[in-house]
Amino acid sequence: MGEFKKLTEDEGKILLKLARGAIEERLFGKSNQEISEQDLNKEVFQEKRGVFVTLNKRGNLRGCIGHIQPILPLIKGVKENAVNAAFNDPRFPPLSQIEYPEIKIEVSVLTNPTPLHFNGYQELLNKLKPNKHGVILKKGFYQATFLPQVWEQLPDKRDFLTHLSMKAGLSPTGWMDDNIEVFIYEVQAFEE
Image (cartoon, rainbow, N blue to C red; front, side):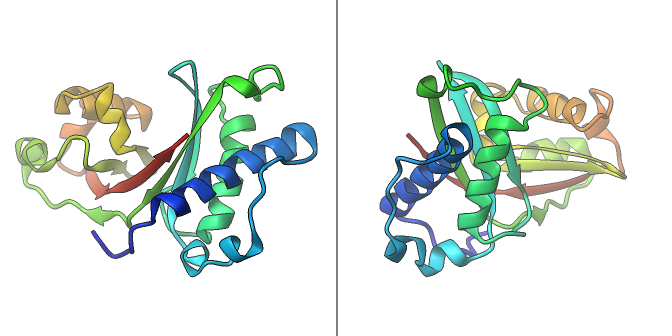
């Protein structure tokens, strides 16, 4: 799962500025985030990567949208997902100018998901690594993911998988089905 070079702290700070700048652009018509062309043209930002942008307000989730698969260059994915997390997350109303100063941004850069092979749900429980693995549950057309950060709220593996099953539109015990597919990935997260 280590197929990508890790980003540096400075590169992470650039991604956070990029995310905040994209939200400011949409909210105020301009951005105060200055990023040099030289920084933006770094090769690492042109790589296609899975990426999520999470917004928190006073420690509570305020929006989270992303791409699991590496479909966009990192720089474009961060901008697009920042705007979507702020204005298009169906769980929340669009971000307002009044709320904006209270928002903290987190950017999660993903490794490519890999299938997790297991025989029966007990082996699945044994193979999952809390706080390390992001998990995708898939059954037919139903699919959902939790980033590794979700383990902080749901540290019990059964609770984690039960909530993920319901997020996917499956029954709470959907993760125990024999024909469930599970993929895992890791993230490198940067927060303000």
